[in-house]
Length: 67
Image (tube, rainbow, N blue to C red; front, side):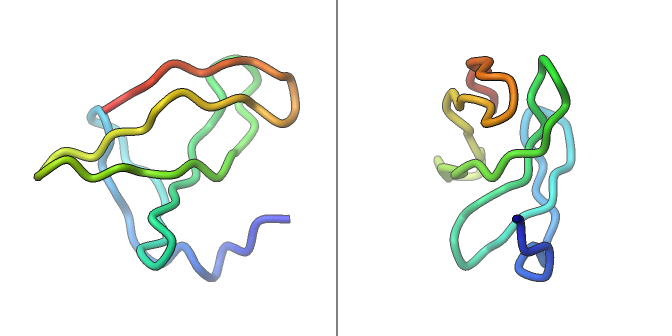
């Protein structure tokens, strides 16, 4: 179960806004296949935030990197 209280900020990745937990560098990102919400680590590269591929826990789809 995702604790939404920790997601106190919003972050923009590839032009889209996502809920963000600044203490853990985690964003809530939707699977591009089934729209399940996943906790995904965000890597900051200067002023750009990047998310590497992640696998959906619901449908098993490998989501492409974005950022």
